[in-house]
Structure formats: C-alpha cells, structure tokens
Length: 343
Length: 216
Ligand SMILES: Nc1ncnc2c1ncn2[C@@H]1O[C@H](COP(=O)(O)OP(=O)(O)OP(=O)(O)O)[C@@H](O)[C@H]1O
Ligand SMILES: [Mg+2]
Image (cartoon, rainbow over all chains, first blue to last red):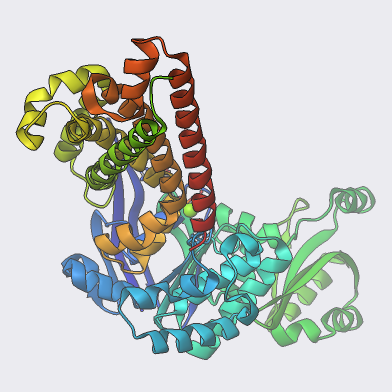
C-alpha cells in the first residue's frame, strides 16, 4: 500500500523555487493497478520518484506499507527500495552487460548466492518470454524486448510494489499492448501493487483499476477508471477520455439535424455492462410516440465490461419525449440532454 | 651512423619503461581523482562543492603548465623522491605529474558520459554509492576509459621524448644528442620511425581492447 499525505516537492534553482507537487493526497491499495495521468510537466515523474526516494519530499509524507522513508536510515531505505521495483521509459539497462547480467543485478547487489541468482533469473526470463535472449546485449534487442528485460530486472527481488514511469511511452502501439498484458499478468500472478504513470488514456483504459488525474502538481480528479470514463468532472479529465472515446457529434451530422429539425432534442445515453446489450431503443420506440434517430455511437471495453454511449435525437411531442426520457432513467441507464455541440 | 643497434634498442626499452611506469602511477592517481571529480559534482552521489572546486582547480593548474616547465619546476621534488634529477627514474616524476591530472580529466569525461538513467536505475535498486561506482559507472564507461587512457599513453610517449632531452634517456635523448646535436640524420629518422610505430601500435591496441571490452 502506498499513501501520499499532503505530499509536496519543491525544486530550488538559483533564483526561484518551483513547486512541482502541491499537496498530493492519494491512497493506492494493495494489489491494485493504479494509473496517474497528466500532461507533460504535470509532476507525474516527480510523484512516482517520491515513492522510492529518488526524490526527497520537501513537505508531507509518503508511506510505503505504513513506513515513512524520511524517518529511516540510508541502509533501511535501501532495504525498502528492494521491495519496490521500478520500470523506466527508456529502460535504463546496462549496455555493457548481457540480458542475464542485467536481470541478475539487483540480486548481485544484495549478495545472493550464484546458484540462487541463476535459478531466479531463468525463471524471470521465462516469465517475460526471453529465455532465448539470456546472452544477448541490450543493443541487440527491440524496444519491447528491452522493456521486458527492464520488467524482469524490477521483479528480481520479488518486490510487492512495481513503479512504472511511462513504461510504454517509447513503444509502438502493438508492443505497448504486449507490455501492458505482461503487467496485468504480473499483477494477477504475483499480486503486486502497480503504480503507473502515463500520458496516454488508452493505457489507463487497458490495465488500470483506478486512476488519478494530475495537473500543476495537484490531483484534480481520481476514482475508478469506470467512474472517470463515464463521468469525468474536470475539463482535463474530459479531454483525456475524449482522446480514446470520441463522443462529440461529427459536424456534418450536427448540421444535418439542425437544418431539418431545429427543435430536435439530443440525448447522450451511456451504456454500461449488461445494459448495453439491451434493445433499449427499440423498446422506447414501441412504447412511446417518439422517433429515434441515432446520430453517433461508440463502444469500448473497460476492464472486460462493455462501455459506451450513443448520441440520439428524439423527435415527437415534448410530452412524449419527456416520458421516454424518464423511462430510460428508470432502467438505470444514464441519459442526459446535450446541446448540439455535445459532449 | 655513430649509434649501434644495441644503443637504439636500449633507448627503446628506456622509453617503454619510462612510459609504462609513469602510466601506472598516473592511473593510480588519475583514476580516483577522475571518479572524485564526478561524484562530488552537484547532484551526484557525494555532492561536495568544496572538494570538487579544490580538485578541479588543482587539476587545472597542473594541466596548464607546459611539460618542459613542469619538469624544471618540480626538480626539488624529484630530487626528494628519487634522489636525483637526471636519469630515467627522475624523468618519471614530472611525467606522472603531467599525466595524472590529464588522465583524471579524461576519466571524468568518460564517467560523465554514462547515461544518468543507469545511475537512477541503480539507485532505485537500492545500490550503495560504492556499488553504483564500481558496478554501474565504471563498467558502463570502461570501453571509453580504455580509449581515453590510450590517448593519455600516446601523450606520455611524446612527453617522455621531451624528458629524454634533459637527461632522461630513451629515444628522445638519442634523437637530440645524435640526431640534432651531431647532425646524424639517420639516427633522427630511425627514432622518429620507432616513435611513430609505437604510437600507431598503441592506438590500434587501445581500439581493439575497447571494442572487446564494450561488452564484458
Ligand atoms: N530537478 C529538477 N529541477 C527543477 N525543476 C524540475 C526538476 N525536475 C522536474 N522539475 C519540474 O517539475 C515539473 C514536473 O516535472 P515532472 O518530470 O514530474 O513532469 P512529468 O509530469 O513527469 O512530465 P513528462 O510527461 O514530460 O515526463 C516540471 O515543470 C519540471 O520542469
Ligand atoms: Mg515524466
């Protein structure tokens, strides 16, 4: 478990100080995959680096399994660090060492016996699917393979926490997918808590249980991935959701509607899980005296549950539209009226 | 030619021993100095402005004195250390003082080239500062260190010839006393050719070693 309590980080340069983190409060529960998303310079790296003390907090606290690193001796801090694996955007592998030696490094540092190192490294190589690359050097590997080595190295000491700072940002979409799958597998098989930093909402969508949005050194929104996707509160969160779930009505469609029916009412209906399979719209059309015009739709999957929305136009008597609207609400489906430029 | 083959061979070995002994001591001094110049920098493992400034200034002072002047300037020290100010052993002292600080700078440069991400990874793994230096920094810089030391060795070969001119023996001595003062062009040509071959050989050896060691 990781707890941030009013965490602050100030960078002092010659003539001014810059507050990169400004009172972060956040709890990452044991065993969850927690994503932090934000634009460049928001303070993501600073935040994650405070967890394993690559940066010293200048205010507030970070508790790792209840321990405040600020109160520990350097030797004990190093011990805690061995319980926290870290994966980097640019892999940070030793170019002069083989894949085997890179993965073995954390074990060599703690003076593990050779036999045990060999056994553990081979196990890890198998786990990340690189058994045939043990003797290769990093420069002979693809980006995805390098990151697998980075991940294996981070897991060498059997940590309970894994920190990923933009672990997929240097990779192409397909490789990103395979690395994310690997991270999920790690989380599931070893019950490792994963804190990951990214600027890509698709990464959050694909692997995270919870997400926090960081901006200007502050957490401006946090919750389950589901909540943030279905109901983003801040402009920034909305933009991130938009980046993977385009729900604005195309201009051409909007123009068409306005030309033909300036009084038409537009609604956005969110489908979640089972409700997305229901023939809701045809039921409405039969039950009420309204015409339904589907303008735009989008469906995706969040943590294995279908999730999506439709933008529909309801035509008919004001009264009937209202009744249809209330009925949809009763079915526990989120619906709200949108203006033509809609989001 | 008024010089026997034996004399040339002897001079050659004098140069070799002068260079290798000086190199040994220069590396013994330069390596820790170079490491210190890196790790006492701002934001590094043992950040210490005081030590860094002092070391850096001392290195700069030695680096700015031309060898021929350094040689004369430290004669008292040379006398103290080897009991004489002429001869091959006496030439080693100024050569070490000339080359040590130079090697420190070269080593500093190679170590600074190591990707800071690697050091970050080491810190994240909970490596001790000494582990960071000896298990990360130096192995990652090793091949460039070898190339830098090759350059320093070539500089030493040149400087040793100069030391020879003031009684240090070796190929430089031979070239000056016979080739220059007694106008024996043949001796001059032979010593120059030997020096060229030594430098070429050294550079080739350094290149091969660095290439081999890039992966260790
Ligand atoms: N060592 C430092 N000294 C001074 N300012 C720093 C330092 N490190 C980071 N900053 C500043 O702190 C802010 C947050 O930096 P940080 O690296 O955490 O951003 P980020 O969200 O990770 O961005 P990116 O997506 O580009 O990696 C930035 O404005 C940056 O300029
Ligand atoms: Mg960053």
